[in-house]
Length: 564
Image 1 (tube, rainbow, N blue to C red):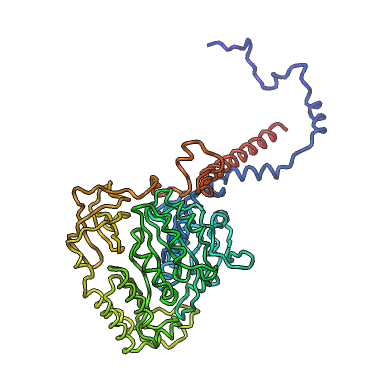
Image 2: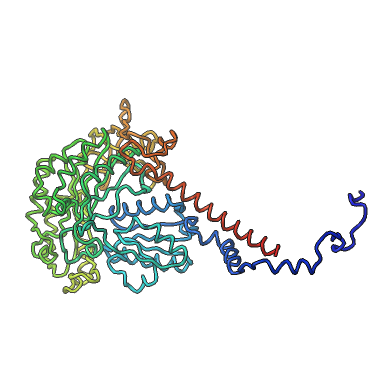
């Protein structure tokens, strides 16, 4: 096919016409051009090449949490903030760019798992951020050297720490939150969070405690008592119910001590919360030590009898020997514990009392241990947490004369055998009960529900039961569970006042407001968290804009270089 040109151009210089400037004239004109620095151009090119790996918020994060429900609540808040900021939370540690390890300092095995996870992350060339009680209590431990740490009262700044860790920097935020010199309970309660179970909200009502137990390392991390104001806690519960939650857990290092630092008390808070609980939804109270619940026994009995509060209380005794309790600095005697249990059993029929026992505390004699055995025989606790004593570094108990390891093991074994010798739920077979279905069993074969006494009831795995209050006939009892058969003519009752969030969804993204195009301040009580959706969107858009501008600047620098 003929060319559009009349004649072939044999050399590129033939394209220059007589009217074009000569090479000498072009060179003279260059004298009026101010040369640009190539440094900036090179920097922009480098930023463009590394944009995918260095811009925070584009990475995947895997989080592991050990320990109590307070720690789990902190983990949910950290995951929510990171997801709202653009990070992708993953359940697969191998595909994650960064591991966020949220630790527990109560026992040696938990810290051992934590330490091993750090090493595993480093072996796999993963970025690491540490959280929880271990680094808060002992940030100078050798195996924590050079790693980023987010303190237990600084979880609202987790995004800042992760951002810096992604860039390869080491950041440590371990300070306490204060207001006018008064220590606060911790980070705000209205932060975004990802609930592990969308049906259950865990609310920390206070942090720290008033005790100084000689074996406790958690005190070194959580510190003295600091309570959240009643109104903030009530508001958080209200927001949770508006997101489809049907069960609330109250947690802290000692719920019974709540409010003593701010001029209020636990019953006052509980009565306010009860007003907010929808019909069919339930409230579970967390652990309380005997000294601070003694003065509220009558009110506590009334609250535990309320139809929307589980008749369940976790009261750790630790030992039935007054001598051992004194060495532990527990600030009560075994008769105080018995008074709590006896009163509640009398005033709250069927109440479940859970307790903890430490075997082999320093100085514990065989006679001391037998007193503990007799206590368990007397009350036949349906829920008993048995712990072999572990000396924690930096605690007074670690410096005491230790019980021989084989004796500790033998006592732990003996107490465990006693616990497994009785079946606490046999008498309930044949009963008809209302249960709230909130979880899936570990073996995935059943749904897990709880009756009024917070006893675990396994029910058929039918989708229509999840998040519902249903009526069942108890037909089997095991050591740790009951099995219930749904009553044929009974319809499931829905306690949730809104559709629950999807698993992994960030709390605070109010779907109704987004669907209705609401962008200004919300008129609902949840206005403080209603804007999280726009926060997440704005940050994501900003990241894309930064990448786009970086690429555009690099291209512009390239063009300028070619022109001149």
